[in-house]
Length: 260
Length: 299
Image (cartoon, rainbow over all chains, first blue to last red; front, side):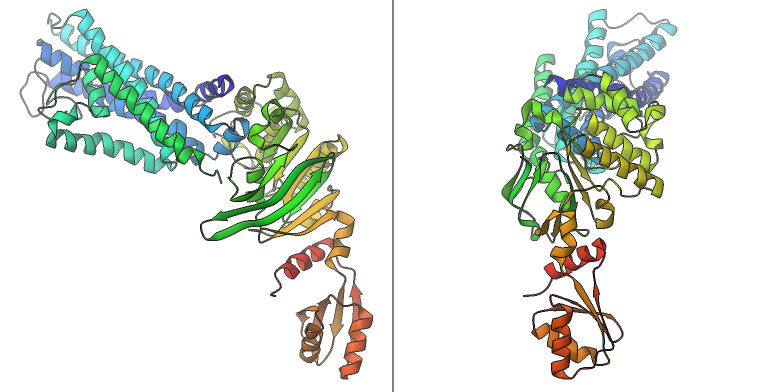
């Protein structure tokens, strides 16, 4: 297990995947955060409340919605990228116990996801607090509350990246796996949450976004109205369980398939 | 001593049979060419040997064990199955560092294998910028990291220019001279004959021939070339005698399975004029083609 873990971390350190995905997550977070901050309190369109209010500041801190999705895609790339680049053959020659490779990838992706989440959270927090203070507003949230949302982004990014490894192992075709994750996050969960609101909070992307500060009816992408956040630890458990379940299914099915 | 043993190996992909009842052995310290036309099942067999593809029957073992059960001795098996299995953004040295880490091999080996494969000057280059020949060398460098006793190479000459082929030939000769056991797949017998002691020939997933290279042509059978204005009548008569006959040009036949005396006697008995008859010792390549053609003979 240790050599496999060492190799997976080394792969992430010696390629541009983590830097590229983190850059994308930061760029999306910055774009959404700045747009939200600039229009906050104007009442126009989907503008968030004023940054002088707790709700407005929280919404701006939670501009990491798309970054969470990018974290999941990072995990997908860690797994399915092996088949796209045809490196899976050497990976399994070096470590033929495939369950260990899957576990090592999951751990490495979680750490990389946490790095991505930290960068996204720092971006969102910097923008929200920067705009609020530049306008002379006293901070409407306590420091622990702000830290809680930033921490939620970090934890949720790590766990979504881990779950992404499972998805990328289940669907070896990288394009297919990316489409599946994006469709799940932006379509399946939103539709499910809007139609069965009681179930919405248990869906992984929704739970992750709400850990990062998204509220009922808010966020980008928007959380369906009527879906209330799970308690913070429960949301983390939902995400962890999702990662473990997807990895287990992959480990029992596709991971055992022939590498041709 | 047998190092690699394939016993009654079979693999089906849905309705298609890739390998069927294949058995052969590779002895310690030999360089063995694993030959067959494209689609013969060579790659599938090697992947089953290395635990990447699950057999539907039989087994393939190294030192009597399946690859994944070799434990620490797995370090002593090197393989190259993909010519371009690299992350394009990774440097040559980083690629080898990852492989060292995955195998638990010390990094000092990196310099040694780069030198051995003539890649020392390319350590800092990104894999995506390497030529095909350089990629083949990088693959070989990766396979040598564990200072392996057994090397399994799938079509390492594919896509190489003449200089690359020459280098590879010398490289494989050196591996053989070092006493390593090498199994090299190829579809070019003449090339394999430059460095291999033994050959295993398969076609359509089944064994056609196995043994020393020198005996392959003999095993394939001497061909008799005949020119006759009544070639078709002679073809029918020869086929009825059990020979494999194929047209080698207008009024010209290539006959396998009968010698010149038997062919001449039959033609004379039937009153078929023969203008020319030669015993063609044949090249290794022709022997290979004959072997695989014979394997495909109906009935």
